[in-house]
Image 1 (cartoon, one colour):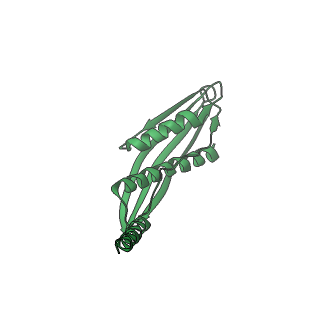
Image 2 (image 1 turned 30 degrees about the vertical axis):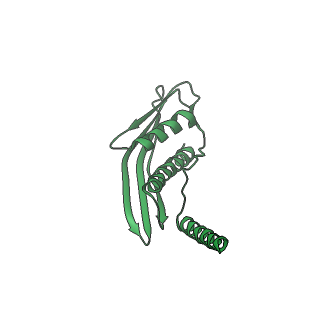
Image 3 (image 1 turned 90 degrees about the horizontal axis):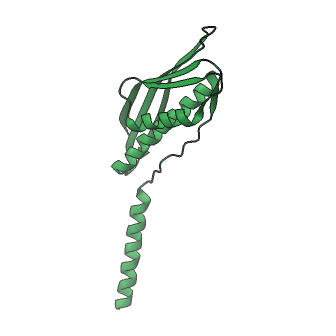
Length: 160
């Protein structure tokens, strides 16, 4: 009788444990894969304007330092990141995060005073549905910020 009781108790525990783990969703931090872009300038500069979250700022600086290469004899590349926007909204059984940043990129040459400019807005969003923790929601925001940098990298790579 005692063995049957423990078998049933074990079975109930397994069902409970599986049921609890099946209703939650796990979210992992995104690994960035960014293109390397080369510019025919000798100097590069990254500037931020406005209120930019520290994680996004660090991601942008890391991308800029590792993936933006200069290989020229003159000129300067300047990239300005500004107007960060973050909107969190309720959706059916979850949350949605909409993020955007504006960017201005300019290449200026000294001798012939050639100036090439491009500007734009980069947008991304992410969603979580079901039961989730605050930590998972923070990871969603970080992953969506990472998406902004991937999209920004693609836009600059194709613009120049």
